[in-house]
Length: 244
Ligand code: SF4
Image 1 (cartoon, rainbow, N blue to C red):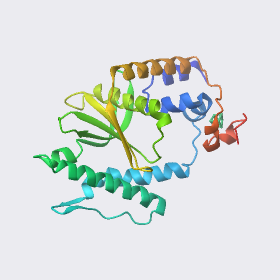
Image 2 (cartoon, protein in one colour; image 1 turned 90 degrees about the vertical axis):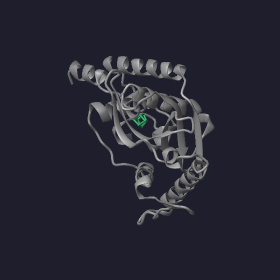
Image 3 (cartoon, helix red, strand yellow; image 1 turned 60 degrees about the vertical axis):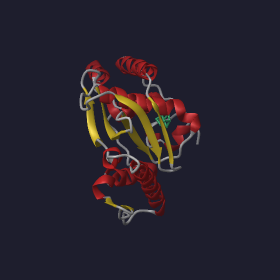
Image 4 (cartoon, rainbow, N blue to C red; image 1 turned 180 degrees about the vertical axis):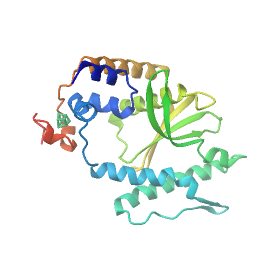
């Protein structure tokens, strides 16, 4: 592998997943993004895809009646996925009922952006945004869906994910104004977290991206074993102690 490959990778567009994979384990990053090794999706990814699919198409499929919202449950999915889907429906019903207190409920209920590939060319970032909504003060809220359960110990991590979406969207010029709030809905625990994304969080993220680019350029790809090795699909390509 010539050095050019690493320079190209370091200077390439950064996604949340590239950055996160590198920080979790640089060797795993190398196996995937440098060596091009792919592994089949695990059961958590498959569950995530099924629930995302439902949420992505929710506003296109839902029927809005005076009495409430009506939507067909997906067929051929597991009980587990169905449980997540029912939580998503409950979440949307609460949003709709709250929107009804306003003069133009649809404006606040329907997203202004759904499952959109976004590029920020100035900062060389890319990602897929689950949704952007308007809050009742007409400010923009980026919403991410997670199919796991909310864990307060991960709050700093969640904040950084929201900072990524803000930086991505604000530099994309796709929206008329900057994103003000970031929110995450956890369909596994039916939890919503939301807060204003601070410039301090964006500055921390910017520094992380800088470090990431520098480390890739210097070919720093040492394995970083942790409890997460348990679920790593690249185990068979890696000889370290996996914490099994
Ligand atoms: S098994 Fe652990 S150390 Fe090895 S690549 Fe996966 S996450 Fe990294």
